[in-house]
Amino acid sequence: MATLPLDKPAGVLVKTTCVDFPGLVAGSFFLKGCNLRCPYCYNTGLVLDTPSDVTLNTVQELFDHMEKRQGILSGIVISGGEPLINPYTPLIIKKARELSYKVKLDTNGTLPDELEAFLNNPDLCPDFVAMDYKTSPERYSETMCPAFSKLYGNKEIFEKKVLRCIELVSSLPKDCREWRTVMVPGLITKKDLEVMAGFLPEDASWQFAQFMNGNCIDPAYNTLTPYTDDELKELITYAKTLITGAELR
Image (cartoon, rainbow, N blue to C red; front, side, top):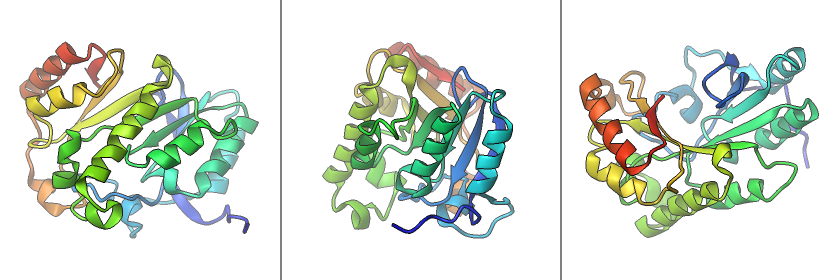
């Protein structure tokens, strides 16, 4: 198998973060490439692999940073894009283990076969998994990925992939998993929260983030007004009645 070049632009390095890996001070690496085109996504340059005003780093720069900060940072977050389809992800995990870092993997929750392969491999199994939970599973094809049929064949297959990912993440210990939902107006309503909660374990950590209407893949979302603070509070308070671990991050 060909050796992957470590000196090619591969993602964006965040040298230090106190919020991306629960309980740990970590570094993050946002890899290029994704199997989805969520219209509200603002990581346009990474997802579409197009030039942007973000400077891309190499995997070698990540490794150099990990070695330099060894003993100061405790964890590495591998995000994207979608790291489960990126060939650099196994290399990063192995390097992190070599340097005694804890590994957190962020996934969009639509690739159960790939996720299961990582979880079943002792050399690649992350210490923590965060899964995006975008809306009610039956609405994914409606609003999240208009071209989903070209990738997954039909609506039912797509839904089954999302639900299978939820099952896989649910099988992890409570302190090794979380679900993340961006509060996009129209995409997340009380009804959606009710449906979504029904698929989560009762002890789930369900983390919500405010929608940001800038640099979205679909320009129409750049003019979408985010929920107000009061609206956001009302929705998350309701989510908390369904899953006690629901909170705004």
